[in-house]
Image 1: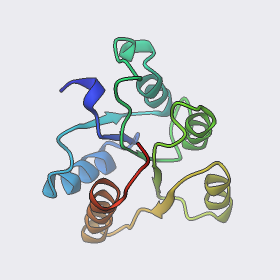
Image 2: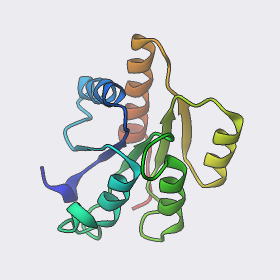
Image 3: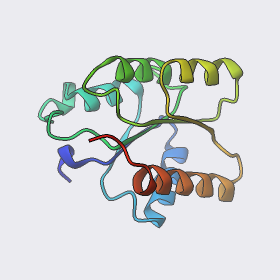
Image 4: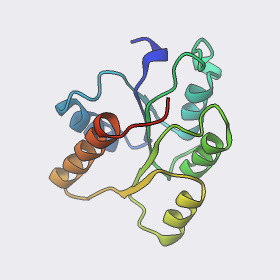
Length: 147
């Protein structure tokens, strides 16, 4: 896959949650152009074409959607969100926080930083896959982002 054609950037440190998310998106044919970043530092490198992604030209293709966990090693999700929304090149990318946290302060801070949606991960397998499928269908097929 060409890294300049990525549609979804999944930022998730939990391998099980990442695999379930990818499986739910594949069920709706939404995972063909997906990259999985395993922590916040890798996500920022991918988005801004740095580190192992330095060959990626961010001017030629930013993800259409970022699914972002909050609790991660190296760089947490709130810092990733703040960095994305503070940069003119990336601030319009829809970011959906998909996390196990239901804490009010996380929800409020996420929205203050510019998150487009905040979804708490359902615990049950079927509810989790349904939530991810619905998110993917909405943000990739129904939403009309600016060009």
